[in-house]
Image (cartoon, helix red, strand yellow):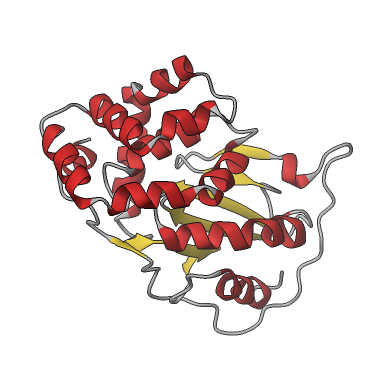
Length: 249
């Protein structure tokens, strides 16, 4: 669990926001995939679950086309993808049962990402993706906070030797994440409990460790994979949609 602690103590922008994966685009169009009907009385968009790797997936868990994103809630490129992609991705592809979409938090900016990820996962499965989209829609004020280098450097210095929960709370207060979540129905007491949840911090640590190793080798966000294959320089919805179609969606 030392990886994330070390990450949280280093300066911002350790990795590349806006730098996606670097290999493995589908080489040839696949045969079209048939739609899969959801169980009676259900809609695939209502089927959300947590994966063994720590991500959250929406849609048919047995979809023949599995889209995975490693993303950061404070990454502008990830935010642009989220704002433009979620509606067409869900309504045109996930809802058909052909495609499932999994999101795994990757703390590309280190400390500021920790509270955003903890609080975004605090809401549970049913509203995970709604909160993720809301964070991306409301990303601009968070980016303004991050752009204040004097304030962020002072906070970074203040939290140099602090434990994970203190780091999470300190950055949550500076960035305004607690108030943001309170406005969306998450009581402050629950928000604080999630920010103080060492087990949740440890899970993010493991997910970061796993992401940096083969077969993922994540170095920046967003990074996209279809059925385990990295998408070459895919950073925008048109890039990803083209790869989905080439995979038969």
